[in-house]
Length: 249
Image 1 (cartoon, one colour):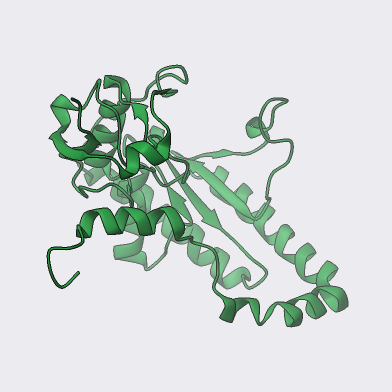
Image 2 (cartoon, rainbow, N blue to C red):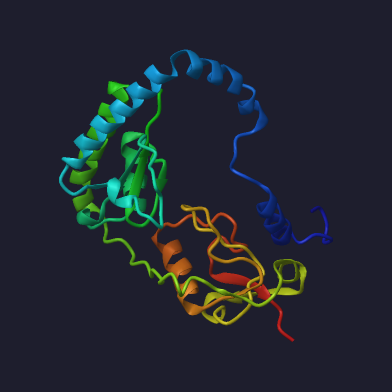
């Protein structure tokens, strides 16, 4: 990295293939203590947390402008159960985006959401929560509803169909990743073979992997998502003005 032997962008892309958001070994060292706590009083702790989360979910459901998503998320071809400590809130009725809501809550209420996308925010509760923290969450959301009237209209996102987002693999990922590559402007990326991984978060699942042929629907989805506030941690060009693609003979 101190000379011209290594391409820093390429090295960063290699690291993104191997790194993880999982807890490190220092956190694992406490697991036996957590295990003992759950054996001795887990039913009481978890039962209390689930009860608090359910009461909080009901309170948030009563706030005008919020749609708390719950059992409708279950289906035969999707999830068969939910983590009831997670409270997923659709904010579309407010005419704002989830990204705007999360930013406002962090700045004005010092409340962080668990995850955020263009139309939803996710509140994550745990056994460490109590009535005081639940009240703070609900009061912050009530303030958010009043503040949302002053938000700028959010950028529109292009949402492709499931068929459009299933890209064609035309090269082995290794061959595309380690082969000759170049950066091209986003308006010339459709039709080219990707040489990088691009992963919107959430959900943290790659929309593009090396060796897939980019199409206009996915390019528009990623570009419009970036403009709206989407987190794309592994794109070579953090602005997504350019895409890394395979050099074509």
